[in-house]
Amino acid sequence: MRLPGYRLASLLVFATVTQLACQEADLGVGSGADAAAGASGASGMAGAAGGSGPAGADGGAIAGAGGDAGGSVAGSGGGAAAGSAGSAAGGRGGASGGASGAAGAIAGNGGRGGAAGATAGNGGRGGAAGASAGNGGRGGAAGGTAGRGGAGGAPPGVTVWIAGDSTVANGSSPCPIGWGAPFPTLFGPGVTVKNSAVGGRSVRTWLYNVQTVMDSTGECALELDTNGDPVLQARWQAMLNAMTGMKTGDYLFIQFGINDSSATCDRHVGLEAFKISYGMMAQAAKERGAHPIFVTPLSSISCSGSTARGSRGAFVTATQEAGTQYNVPVIDLHALSVALYNQHAFCPIPGGDVSATTTGPVGDFFCDDHTHLSPSGAVEIAGLMAGALRSQSIPLAAYLK
Image: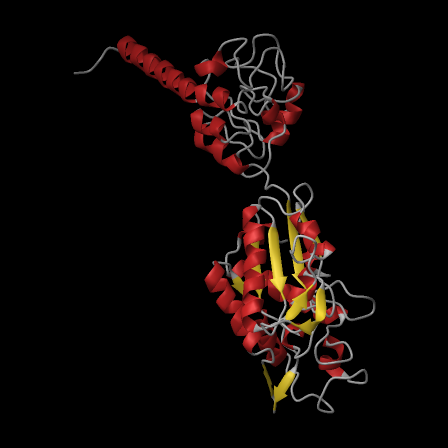
């Protein structure tokens, strides 16, 4: 049946109004705790927390003051008048936030979104969920300072702690330099690297005051305090410090196994004692919410004809076994370094071994011997570490440049 023209026009107007009303409801306009003037949570009146809008323009006002400077409808993300904060935080029409709903939530920085947008915690004029979250109402403090990345916001700052020997230590100019020295340059903002590696240390001489005599178990005797506990080195005490040491989200890299193979004290460490020491350090990190990572020892340059071969033997295996035993990820730097040496065709070495007079690529990579790194060699090994973080999907990789 054909409808008269006036009836058809009326129906079209009714449908349009209904659709707009539904959209406004989805966007949280005038709904939930965020809608009414003086709503609780993060919204606030008259620019209370976020400094947005005139009195009563906290939730549902169409022309609020939180949008981007380009004249957005319904400001999102909160913030200063003229939409400066709203634009930076991703207000509707801004670079980051969507106009509504899921787009605002994904941007995490505004969008007029409904409950999902508010749940993101950094904007969204949201409905009840936004207000109850304490972060989402228009004009809310969080809206004006939204971080990147949606619900998670900006990644929290983390500290990377490093325990190791001279192949890891910052070293001295011009060399030797460990891979820990250039490692900080591979990260973007939010990461602090505290490299506590020390040249010449086994895992136990790094941890404890170790004597030059063996005890009845065949391990080097430890100096004990008045309570009969081992005396800890200051660097390990610093990592354990409840106020300034390892905290939730931090990382602890542990790499030894070069000096530990010594037959004499104070550096000698048996394989079982080696694994127990790694396990103790890993447990201490986990108890503080940090993430331990074991690293197999860097290989020296050792050749079989024209092929580089591994040089650390049993301590590579012990590191891997400790990772399995204590449920800790292992970066096999030993294997990665041997592969790199072969890629560079370091073998055979001119003169049979690296010395201060060795020239060519292998002489440039190492520092006067077959173990320690030059500055350029340290940069390449640090690059292997960064590549392993990515290839092994270790979350710290998210902070790499």
